[in-house]
Image (cartoon, rainbow, N blue to C red; front, top):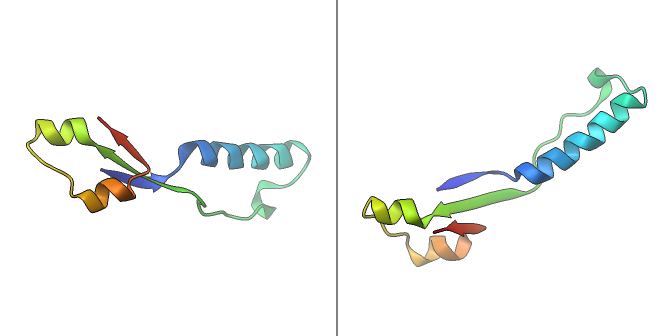
Length: 67
């Protein structure tokens, strides 16, 4: 299982900050942002290899299931 920020969305937001800095903004003046999109990934293949099963509620809640 993995729960965290969507890396693709984070990179897109970083590009906006790079653009502002290249246009002359001071990095210290830019706001700190929290992630707006969160991912919940389940690795069913590894879980099966360990003899574990995910409950249906987790499978339904997952953003992506690897397996």
